[in-house]
Image (cartoon, rainbow, N blue to C red; front, side, top):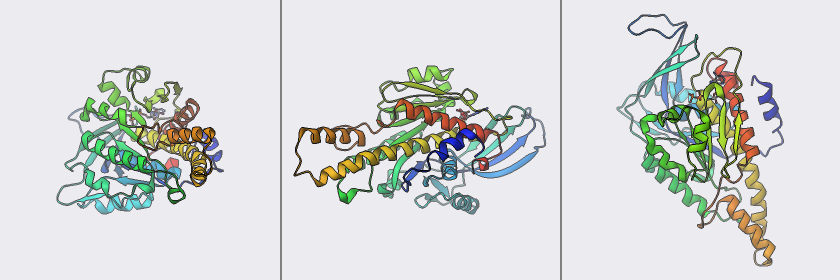
Length: 373
Ligand code: ADP
């Protein structure tokens, strides 16, 4: 970790309860072929790159890399092509301790590939992507044991199927009742990144069903917004969750479920070297920080909920009823609606985006992700 601000935040957390539940990232894994050039080449020219590397890529896969480097147990759910690149990708997932045991293996269709040109001159990353793999299905998602996760993050794509997956998570959350028998289970928080213009404005249909939405600059620009302030004042006004919007060197802005708006500047390195995956890094750091706060919040209430369940028949006072109602609202259980994002107040959200900008700023100042190690 290169920045003292990051160190301050992480060291201050050493007394935290250890979190063994995983964050699951649902989306893509691909092969990145990265060429670093002094300048972006002109069309129809030949140019030598100064460096060349292959790496594991894809939004969900990158987010897992960073989560793992920060120390968060995580899992990737994606389609994996069983072609000649499979060993490279699987070895790298293992190297970074990313669980990929539920990935759907596909025979006969090649691995998705991104050809990426990095410009040292401007720090830009230009991506040409190819993918023939099918999308994940609900059946793939149903293989998971939801008790293993505290948070599930989706790449915004395949909207109809993602909505079914979200429905399954909701059913699971609503089934929790906080007795001793279910002591180690907590409701799963749901987040989605809206990034790809290719998926169209239909991605906005996910907003009413999720707890945290990441609105990427690329998607916001596709919708016609030209700055992050416009985004935060215009997207997801009816959503019950938090909205987070990162905007390159301008940092990030976010809105709590209650409507408070918070902001963080970027933390630029001395020289921008590699902005590839800056957004995935930002998302991972934000997920880590929010999940940590959620776990603390949940356990505080869960202790009370479990004790009360044990004493249920003895204590029928008004006070007990009120606490129970608060617990239900805060933990998001029961069939009468919920607000799982209630733990995300303005202080938590401000710290979250500051932490995420700090980690993403460190990442863009060095090659790849190892600066976060
Ligand atoms: P994406 O990879 O989706 O294009 P962004 O460019 O919006 O992501 O960047 C995400 C975050 O990474 C920003 O909020 C910022 O904190 C950090 N970041 C990106 N580019 C820079 C930069 N040039 N200088 C400092 N921080 C940056």
